[in-house]
Image: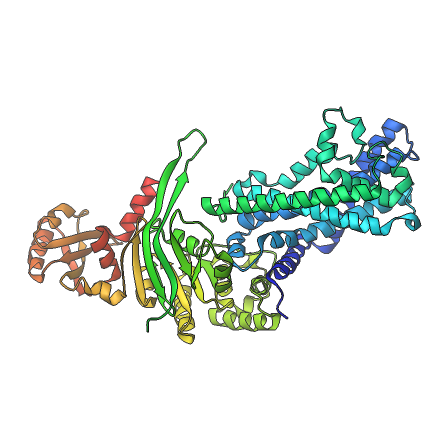
Length: 284
Length: 339
């Protein structure tokens, strides 16, 4: 049976993304890099926590920040995975115009290219959590994990991040090579406002609303509650909200975000055609 | 009954708004102006013009990469701005002089991947890849990573990518640019063969090589500064010059000749000189053969000794000179200096 253009675009781009992501070096180096990068990232945070709290790894604060940090790896991975493809195809491989003139659904193609980054990001998350459970007493009891909530939250979160990546891809389409790491820059900027490593209450009152309007904040909270429910509930953020409330907010904000991202991408795509930017190369 | 149109443009225009930096005021660059073309299904149509004439801009519009600023265009019956998805199912494009492709993938993988975007089942895609690779002479490199290919071989890979999907309308933008003589000849013969295989295939080729346009195209549009100056079969375009006489002369002279003195001779229409290794090659157009004696006298006056003199048939280059007043390379040099 003939696959639809959307599915074809997604599957072929996923294959291509994986080839590019996994073939830049030999498999051993790739595997080593995939392990060392997330562990090193977590180690810096653990070291800082250890100095500040004098090694109090039993505090619920530790589980809070460790899990938040672990899952936050998805944010730059997916945002960059989707948006970086524009630069990669346009400037590096010079194939973007051929992708654009083929019967390809561009958003699905971009999502497909991000799958490899998502998979590598998942390695990072799993390795980070495993290290936390095995060596740092992160209180993760597999039998008490709320798997349905976890899976639904993870799916919604990744979808929301992919749609965020689509907005960045649209912006990238209209700009030059300056936006090379736009995904990483945005992810880095949001790190402090999404409750990834500390509750929003730590922020000054006037900065907290930033966190409240970002779907990532609700997503991370849901992920924590699904994995270590009792510990996560010890924090003031969102204590008034049930898991169902949070899920509803995440789904609603993702929907709004999704609709906005599609309109923004379409606008940028249209502008790029108007201005002849689809095949521009900046050559520097 | 007339043949259906594969490409149609109506008063198509494109203006670029450009500025080099933020402080500079935006200026307009006219790339296409009132282009009206009708390309019939089954035609191998050539767009001939110097670099910067607007050929690539036209291809970009027809392949949905760029929006026109005025007018309309249809490809395979679909409006390129309103129905781009329908257009893309029916077209493919190859740009010459590029090294595009995913360097980490082999030639076969690159081509297979693009075939997937067009919904070609894998066994059929692999069969076509093998066949086309044999035709263009890279069958032995199918399992080589494309980053390891020379520029010419990469270009051949891209040419296969264009033909692989068997499009209704294929756009080739300077397909032999950067290829050596032998490879260019192979590509040209392949293009002709591909067209002959199926009368419903349409190909729009842009080139600034006169020989390519003359050898391949059923009809040619001559384009300069965004305007189509003439459109007809190569034979009919040249027929307009049947009252003129063309000479090619090689002379040895102490210095470049004084063009003005030659152009002052009544009956001399064009005079162009090209320094070669040991001599000067001259392209001279006369209104009648009798003028030749005066031209020869002028050679003597300028101490130029004739090595060889040939009367030749008009070419598309002569058509271009007649329309624009300059040879194509002169127009390109002016464009380069202006930039």
